[in-house]
Image (cartoon, rainbow, N blue to C red; front, side, top):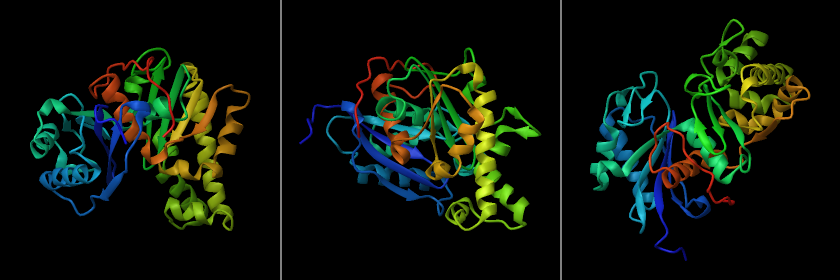
Length: 310
């Protein structure tokens, strides 16, 4: 039985199509049962907050020792204010004070609710209890409908400094005829396949079709070449020791990693796939909560973090 004096935080991972929640323990970032739900039918801020509250209760929000909630959220988002600035997804949350709305539902003070960028949460999770443990210079890349990124040096999240693009974001950096996200994202894979075949199929279907469909295989190979080229050029000056790949497309890493590694040549950087997978951001919320107590983008000191497996 767990020690009820041990600190715990209610962690949320807010995605483009679903929300997941779970209790994260301070000790080696042990994660309790994870509950999740889609929010496709939600179209108001109140309904979204009600969904978060419902999931939090199911995850164990009445747990002894709970310090509050930490939410991993996509950007743009004002993390300090707890206000979403997104217009392209979850538009009904734009300008809404989610901190106070959630605090009221749980009967907490607003100060008990904090926010963290989802890519940063993912990398923190892998640093604290996953594939980036023990590395001094780490990059996290999340591959999905877009491309997210996060950088860490000696256990600190960094958003500026040598080799770190502005805000730690690479999605909008110039690349070939467009920006990075045009070539490294799920829509890039879909577009490649459509260019080869004049047919449009979803990425998950293309991944399943690779063994029998040369065009699907070619689309993933092209994706891997672009990802490898981005790592080799855009990330070169950061001198990462490890790059951890997460997000939905990383589940099909075997289809494109050989192409990535071919682009990297004799680079010494270790390329790893997320160990925590869908749990990485939830664990990262725990790391942020227990090491810094807030979800800001300021450096978070993880030097004294206890490492451990889930």
